[in-house]
Every structure is written in C-alpha cells, then in structure tokens.
Amino acid sequence: MRAFFVAGGRLIDSSPMYGSSQKTIGHGLAALNGSVDIFSADKVWTSSGRGGPEQIDRSRVNWGVPQFDLLQVHNLLSWQAHLPALFAMKAEGRLRYVGINTSHGRRHDEVARILESQPVDFLQLTYNAVGRSAERRLLPLAGERGVAVIVNRPYRGGSLIRRAKRAALPPFAAEAECATWADFLLKFIISHPAVTCAIPATTSVAHVRENMGACRGSLPDAATRRRMAAYIEAL
Ligand SMILES: NC(=O)c1ccc[n+]([C@@H]2O[C@H](COP(=O)([O-])OP(=O)(O)OC[C@H]3O[C@@H](n4cnc5c(N)ncnc54)[C@H](OP(=O)(O)O)[C@@H]3O)[C@@H](O)[C@H]2O)c1
Image (cartoon, rainbow, N blue to C red; front, top):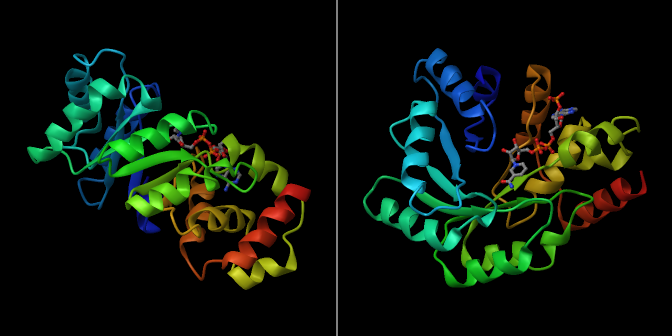
C-alpha cells in the first residue's frame, strides 16, 4: 500500500466478499498513519436490504475510515433495496458516491437498465484487451450519462499479463510510451474515453510499481488502441 500511494495511487476497492481484505486495508492505513490521500471504495453485498446498513458499518470499522467515498452494490445483488439506502446516505452527507458493479462481462442488459433509470455515479465492470464486450453498449452509455467507470479484472485475473509477458512488446508500444506489458495492457484500458480508472490486484510490491507506471506518459489514440487490441488477440 505504501508503494501504491508513493507512486500516486488513490483508489482502493474492496468488498465484504473478499475474506480478510478489509481488515488488511485497515491495518495498512493505520500503519500509514493517516498520511495518505485515499479514495475508499467498498461494496454492499447482502441479499437482505435490511442487512445493508449494518454490513456497511462493519466494513467501515474494518477499514478504520470515518466514511466511504464510494459504495457499490456488489454484483447487483438486491440493488432495488440497496440503491435507495445508498442515495439516502449520500443526501445526508455520509457518502460521496453511489455505484453498481458487475464482472466477467455478465448481466450487461440489467446494468444498462439501471444506468438508464437510476442516478448512479459509478459503474464497475470488466474490460480488457481481450474482453471488450463493454465497448458495445455500457461504456458509451456511461460516457453519455457522465457515470465514472472503474475497470476490474484488467489482467483477466492474471492470465492475460502472464501470457503477454512470454512475448516481446511490439515496436509500436513505444509510441504510447509503453515500456512494459503492464503499461501496454493498462494504458489500453484507461485510454478508453469513458474509463476513469483500472484496479489491478496484486500481492507483489514490484508489480504495484510496475502497474503504476501506466499512470505516466502519454496514452494511445484510437488508432493505436485498435493495433494494441489486434496484437494482444494474436498472441
Ligand atoms: N464483481 C466484482 O465487483 C469484481 C469481480 C472481480 C474483481 N473485482 C475487483 O477487481 C480487482 C482485480 O481483479 P482480479 O484480481 O480478479 O484480476 P486482475 O487484477 O486482472 O489480476 C490479478 C492477478 O494479476 C497478477 N498481476 C498483477 N500485476 C501484475 C504484473 N505487473 N505482472 C504480472 N502479474 C501481475 C496478480 O498476481 P501477483 O499477486 O503475483 O501480482 C494476480 O494474480 C479485485 O481486487 C477486485 O477489487 C471486482
């Protein structure tokens, strides 16, 4: 976490679903002594609308933060019950942003219906150079409605970057200032006009530093993005 913040990182995403991760984040934040500018993103993940507030409070205590910047309805579970409660928290000044999320390219029709009918601030979904179904409808829709987009599984759970690292970077990677495969794969994602940020997960400090490299230098234009996707697909 220290390496992440030193490199300019801000957003950490967790969920009550992720085992001990909330407590681990709380431990890291306490060790960093409140010295970091964090954007805290967590989720509500319970089928009972009534259980939402209690779960959110437990999550907040685990993190050790006074309030969250963003709460997302995890995998759309009981979104009809949770969204009104999250909007109320926002109106009372106890939450900055409300979001929904999905992954693995699933349930895009339902996500689109929610974006069209609810004033959500954030959408989290899966998007990467070989999983581009979000380009068809959800990314344009989020862009039109001014909804911020967080991209999960940028490396397809790791398989994409492990496969890429067995090959050489193409010479045109230098045009988008990509010195590593992490730069190449992450810059492909964050250069989409509707994308706000990507959230690669890692257990390795070296990988944190490598991934944060994508925040520096220029981003690929539309033509270079097409070449990047074609190159990755052919690997
Ligand atoms: N429905 C949902 O809301 C949902 C679903 C899935 C994920 N998410 C969110 O998205 C985040 C990321 O998803 P994910 O963990 O499934 O997939 P991911 O970020 O695509 O992949 C993580 C894997 O990539 C490896 N990796 C990271 N950086 C690397 C590098 N520079 N070089 C080589 N390998 C590297 C990691 O291994 P090392 O540990 O060895 O670095 C790890 O195995 C999650 O933590 C979560 O916050 C949300």
